[in-house]
Length: 78
Image 1: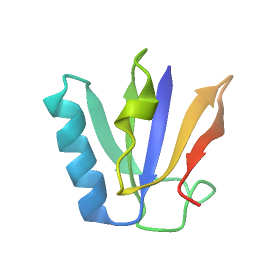
Image 2: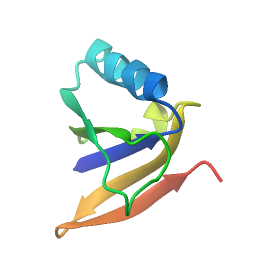
Image 3: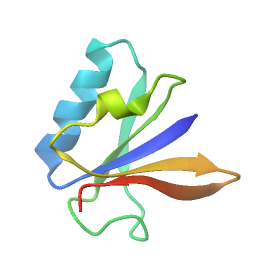
Image 4: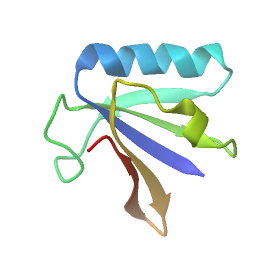
């Protein structure tokens, strides 16, 4: 599965990028489309078959899964 994670702050995105690297998941930081979030504007995109519930951190605003070319919201801190 491919995921896009959006954050409250730039530093949160960088910390999450480093966290994914530390557990061996390739990822990339990228600008977030405005339709997904108007917060910090930086997101992290990655692919994994692991359970992402164990990858949720306090810096995350929302998590989206790519499904047939569309972003489907899986998690929101609200």
